[in-house]
Picture 1 (cartoon, rainbow, N blue to C red):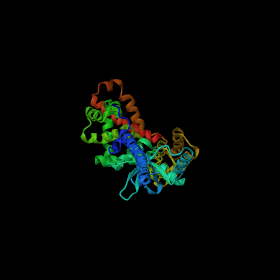
Picture 2 (picture 1 turned 90 degrees about the vertical axis):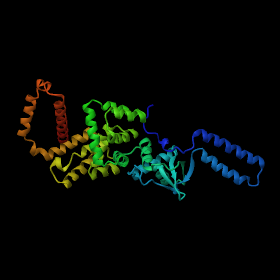
Picture 3 (picture 1 turned 120 degrees about the vertical axis):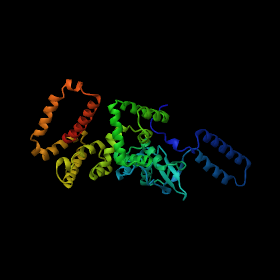
Picture 4 (picture 1 turned 45 degrees about the vertical axis):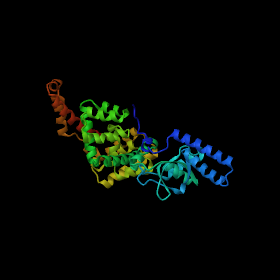
Length: 372
């Protein structure tokens, strides 16, 4: 059966099911009518209690906004005043469409599992209460929070990457560099064997089918643990490697721009090529160039291709003196052009061709970074 994104409800097995709620509501309504008919001396008190229970059984209750605390380990680490104001405007115009999800605490307060912006917007509007669903404490609150955000919230790529890799290191025991190495090695192996599409198909498979599929793809136990986490969160491992993993190594100026200026991830990755190594200047000078370029990208709302053009112009200013042809590269070009003929390649073994492909792919990637 297709799985799609992980189902948040699976994390809360103890929650009352709909059919049970309906029966409970019917019973409570009958009890209210019985008390009214009996004219009990404590009628109004009992009815008030039953009404409260009846409201609870419908699945949503009004909770004092002052009794709610944010989840300190929530995936959304970037909450700007602008985003809160935008949510407040929507709440004022349309009302609260979706209830927040709360976990009861021992001190009589509640912790947010989902709905940080809705709660913050409600407080900004001066709302005394907010509609909420109360759920039991999940066995793994961090993972449940991440699943909730992946399913319902639009995390920026940096928050998403940090939250995902925090959960991955916790679940697998691997460090970030080990995750990157394992991820890269497996994907390269699958690319060589033309099996990347088979891995992608597992995203919509059941847990059992995913386990079996990874075994068919010759992904070993330690690798399986890593890839099962990706699949559980509905994440394409190839996309994680290309788009999320690089977020973690961005320079601080670009991370701040993502968090507080809403710089897009693709723009940030392009701007990251304005590094001291590529421009052959100090880290401080490179940071100044990136910050200036970032401000221009945001001010002019540049597209990714336009951003790359801007970056090419900046690089040209620093690399003009090094544009003379390299004799070594010229010799290599000639050797590749004349030496790697169709006949030569046809006479090579499969292992040699695979090794040559890996080397050429690596070098093409390095060249691409230099000429972006």
